[in-house]
Image (cartoon, rainbow, N blue to C red):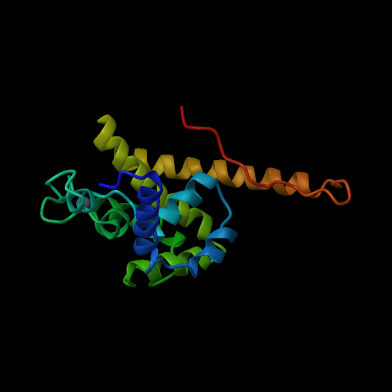
Length: 194
Ligand SMILES: [Zn+2]
């Protein structure tokens, strides 16, 4: 324990630098270009840096002792498990197959994320799906909510629509003669779900 605040800060900084050493910094540009709500962009940044607080990670940090997925008792809840290999994720990807790059599911996690982030046609919807897979899991664990397969599909579809509508509105405003020299702020965030 350091008594001096400066030292504490320095230690914390070193810890962050250490953790980020292997971070996929090449992803920055692609993530920057990703079109969609900032909260999902932020989520993807966390995923790409392996910082999602999965049960496996909580066990590593000694916050909990059970690292297994609630749905798949023989599997650890890792990022890869939540986003691809969990029985629930598989059902979602079966349904929304067209939102991933063909044959990308068997790639290593980071490669799968990057190739899909860069794939312009489906990148936004891909981001929405992985965010929703995490979000519904959290809501099930923390709030005791239960999502049926169709309920989850419907929520993902609803977010596709929210984001698409918002993008169309941005395009519409940006083509209606913006004052010369004005920098448009196209960053936006859809309202929270009710
Ligand atoms: Zn599972």
